[in-house]
Image (cartoon, rainbow, N blue to C red; front, side):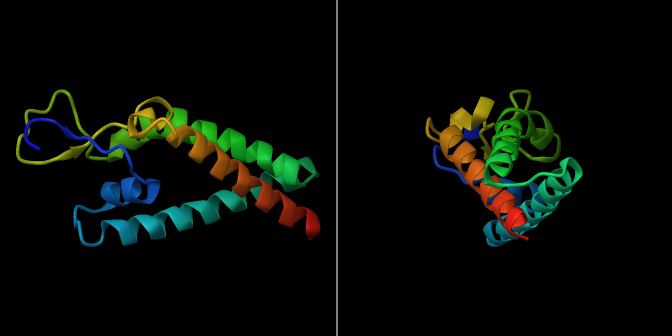
Length: 137
């Protein structure tokens, strides 16, 4: 598509991360999946540190951390931080030879109406799982 951002209504976060890390279209998904896994692992360590610092744990507290994490990821991270390192579409760019990804928009709504719900539910579930496992130990 010449002259504008590539419009994708179904995009996944590992793909978005992968395109921030490499321009090799054959490896972008694998690199994005690895990066997403590693970031998820680091965030679970962060959840552990927070729950350890407050002296409480459990699935409900983990879910609350997941909700905060998901809201931050959808509202600030993909709109403010990711465009600083990602070759997304730029309204100031006159490039007609490179297809850029469309900016996600607030809560990633540019990628579909269900994207914010899926992202929040996934983060809440992840946080609940981490909080629940910490409570068991």
